[in-house]
Image: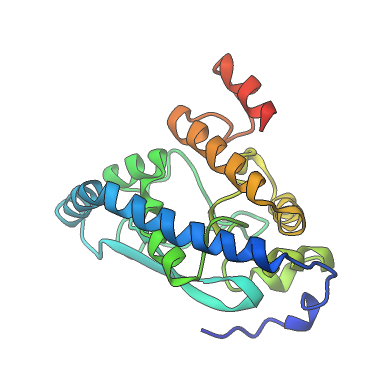
Length: 226
């Protein structure tokens, strides 16, 4: 899908990615995504059945997002809300999230707490629309309010997880998130990606760091090393 975003705003931001590193990153994305899909296939089936028979509407939620070079794509997620739920936004126009959101189904609440609702995005990764690690995939109208330096985040594929996701994603303003995404796009390395993936495991399993706080004694020391 195309986008009406002015690509000249980020086509010459001075950021050059090593072709070799980019090729390795893409290869790892495909290989790891296929392996993960194979391993979690029974879980995917169980989730599909749970959503299909506990609430009305499609099992998979599809929504337009903006990706690399400002091109739009359709992101895939397991549906966690009631069918045709109203689109609620925060004052800064970011997506509204709450632990007590009445739009979220019982199954959806569990999927969100465990991040299992994002597993279908592995298909987006295999397609080349996303990466395992990268900036958050924003809604198509997001770039219209970018500050000049924030267009750097569109130089790389958006990710299933990323620097924002493991650094208090629910306690950070939209502009701060975009700054962090831009920093990642200009500084990413394969080793940084590996550290983000490992820290994501801690965040998901321990539910720590999502709001910028680490309550488990050993978690902060591990996180600081990353």
